[in-house]
Length: 384
Image (cartoon, rainbow, N blue to C red):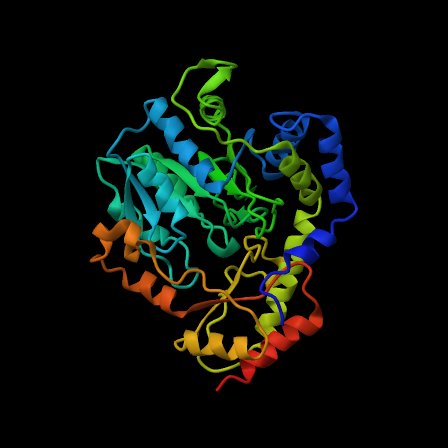
């Protein structure tokens, strides 16, 4: 069986450094809000180019805390609207509704599966306060036009960077970005970003973990307090906060893995290129390459997932399963069709619904061997 993601093999590839890092924490006697978390926050902020990184319990909490902080700062209030992709994992939307804000769903671009940025401005109303972009499957979702729309309407931009750690966005030649920087990493593009370190992510912990990244000093201060019971001083609570903290062991693990993230992402791009060259059956739609670079040179995509589409997705998945290839579907049910949002079930988003009917995620990771991705491709090519 070719596993969809061999987490144990990935973990083993970092030994003995991981074990040494964990033992260092165990022997220190300090397990929360200590030196490892502080060091990781500094290193991750530097890596992505953000001024602040606040370690939290998971990626969902990171997004929740960003909006909760803006509410505390008077930038948002209950009932305000946040534009968000209809085609996303439900966590993006849960973070909005948990803060009693209103998600405004927008259809995706069918070439990238990311939010169709050309459809954003038409959905802005007097109640809109933010746009949430999701760098889905590891592909950066950004444009200079998006920055200009946000500036024109005085909107915040929130990045859901759960799947794209290490991805870059390069401004089109001759058209400088609003920030003045030509190359930036996801997680530092918007006003704030939620990052996830779930074990299966490109930068994964050995348990749950997440972070908020931002260049906004005041937002960072409030997020840090909110994540620690609303407290900036022990037993003094300025806000009605949460208990959402990255622990010392996970921070130590992430510090080890961060040093190899660019190398690991590049290996994923190499495997993506191999899939493109090897898979050749009629009716299959491979991830579209954007820009003029080759797949290995396109740093805007880190291939957290390698997602194909096929009109007979379920039959293709069954064929792969029967031939020893494990696959997953990201995602089988769109948020607006989930029971959790039953009041949306009558809404129709045809592009999103088509994506959820047709997508299939193939095995991909930095530790995948040539014989494995060749076998995956051959098995797909034998599908009839």
